[in-house]
Amino acid sequence: MSFSVLTAVRSFSSTSTMKMALKNVTVIGSGLMGSGIAQVAAQTGHNVTLVDVSEPILQKATASIKKSLERVAKKKYSDNASEGEKFVAESLKRLTTNTSAEASAKSADIVIEAIVENVKVKQDLFKALDKAAPSSTLFASNTSSLSITDIASATQRKDRFGGLHFFNPVPVMKLLEVIRTVDTSDDTYNKMMEFGKNLGKQTITCKDTPGFVVNRLLVPYMGEAMRMLERGDATAKDIDIAMKLGAGYPMGPFELMDYVGLDTTVFIMEGWHEKYPDNPLFEPSKLLKKLVSEGKLGKKSGEGIYKYD
Ligand code: CAA
Ligand code: NAD
Image (tube, rainbow, N blue to C red; front, side, top):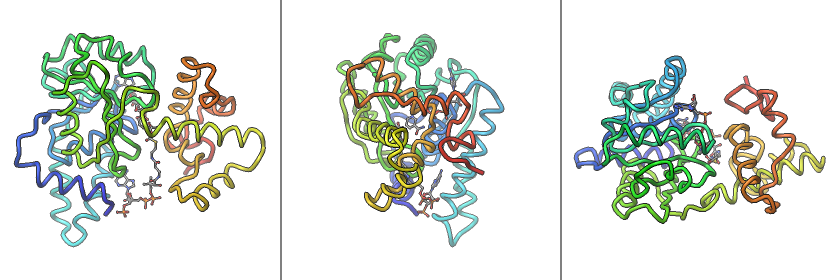
């Protein structure tokens, strides 16, 4: 079993008997990230409502969460299949789905947003949620690249707003970046840090600065890999092999872009380029944009830089 899965499970056993300040969790967006966040929250004893725009999307997400929980259970309870089944069933029992974000926010201690990487769409969502949710509800965005301050500006609760930046795949990646803006209160920050620990994550804190820690380093690296490919310096396959075997990365940059989603990668690069046009690190890639315009979004759509079964 991986470290993070172990920590999450251990964390559940040690926190399940304690009172959790943020017990009722609403996750909005059930794609790659939202489904992972919802899964980890449910398997660590939180009551979770997962929201998306349609029932078929939510059904797909629930099926993928079940599969991922079974993967965790298979390792954790390798010698006790019935305990494993119980773990999956109990986690799923704590998970409900809904197509109304506003209705789902009414009983939430925290709302975590994981929808498309677009500031206006996120602001519109939070503006509506601000009216629907009790004043005690904390708001968090899982944005990869946008300013938490900009997103929070659509609400009247800037002190109860922060960034919770998870990593893909959420059930496996150990890190959670907790972002505090100049307006985030100590109480909100402390509760978010505690929440991260209850999820079994290692938390770090970062200011509200583009890309926080990880993406500020990772996205320019991906961008330079695209430029290498565009210049014809080496093939995508060879660049991936080079970074795996020469730098010890678990995936090469192209495998990683396909894994993250080429659409999300383009949103990040173009958003930063628009905001900081003179920074060469944020130069967007024409080839990447072309792939996205052809519907090649990466692993999630079956084709990106590589093809998938
Ligand atoms: N659910 C549950 N468990 C999962 C899982 C999932 N969705 N995906 C993988 N696992 C588990 C596997 O069961 C396996 O567990 P054990 O080691 O205990 O057997 C372990 O994770 C490794 O999985 P695999 O053997 O299937 O595959 P792998 O060894 O190739 O690892 C990987 C897969 C963990 C994804 C690895 O390739 C990796 O770490 N890649 C880099 C991922 C990364 O960099 N993510 C960050 C992206 S950037 C980001 O997220 C921020 C942003 O804003 C864009
Ligand atoms: P995704 O495309 O896999 O999923 C987004 C989901 O949000 C879709 O199911 C979509 O139907 C839903 N959605 C869109 N608008 C909605 C709305 N108004 N209400 C409810 N649901 C809505 O995207 P993703 O990769 O999960 O990324 C989500 C967020 O997480 C983005 O902000 C992204 O930057 C960030 N993020 C992504 C990664 C990654 O590796 N993909 C890692 C960390 C953070």
